[in-house]
Length: 274
Image (cartoon, rainbow, N blue to C red; front, side, top):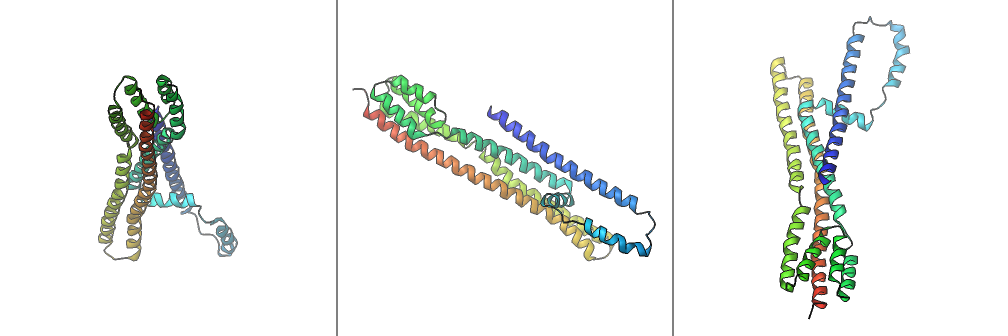
């Protein structure tokens, strides 16, 4: 189920990103076609320019935030900008899947411990074990393993060792996927910097081909080169926020597991069989 959710998220994010890229490229192509068609037309009479000018000024409305981002994305070039976008989408898909998993792994450990204690007062070890099985989350899972060993007649020291072992396994499952998010955080600015270096090389090639250090040539080349770095850094910042949020949530769950395990062992010691 977890893999299905992650796959659907990745597919949705890819579809959303690619559709925006296609729409942006179509709009750019339509604009270029319009300019090419309008070029051969004969110039309008001088007296009509004054009448058309206000209409043109009215149509030149400021770009929205989404249109501005789309324009900058196209100006940066589809090669490295597309790679940075794919890295961002993959990182966000993994992050969202981790957040959903960690949210489902969170449970009220105090309520669970109270229920276990009520069962243990009456010597109902099987009922306490069933209560843990019916409760979601890693805390209930390690309690189940502890109760199984306790029910089999193992000592409290052996039960505690089993809690530590299964706690380590549960903690590893919680941290699964963090390394991939970290990889996306590292790759996004790296590809952005690579796009910048390649763009700078292209800018110098344009200067060499033109044989002139024209400010127009330098400015346009530098803009395209730096846009990839900007988008790479933006992607890394977004993923870093997700990474820190997930890490803090994992730390909270692990601390809860440790505290609950101590209370669980106290309950077993209190109602231990004589």
